[in-house]
Image (cartoon, rainbow, N blue to C red; front, side, top):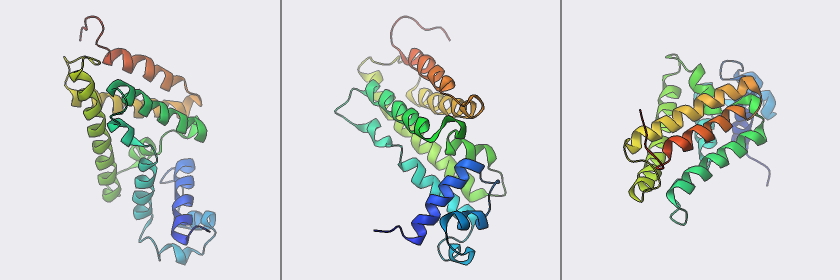
Length: 195
């Protein structure tokens, strides 16, 4: 079945926003990429900002955050598997594009308040999902318990997004490898920790 016009616009928006950034492309370019007249865009989205919010929702859903609640896996394995999946997705897309969430966050301003709110909501939701897995890992001694689960989760999300921005500069997985090394050492319940 051929994709609907809306699906074509979403796919074009994802590709263009990821390649050029929110400010780097307009409705005309997105419409051209989707192979539709510009007027057809407005039959499905009121604005570029509304499209960006829909693209963000679709993009975030594609990262299978539900693995963080998979009771068939040990909690620390849920966390590791989640970030391994994220790494694989970014490797497939090319590290020089970074993470769309980080890119949109870096570009967002008060001129796009609905997009800013959607980004905050998505990052909060992701952090809460990670915090639940961290808390479960703490309860069985897999993760240090001297730092609140929510604090550790915020650190993981913030660090991952920062490393994603660095991959845009390096064009390789080095910053994300650093994330895995440092983040899982921080989470470790082995030995004593000094803050």
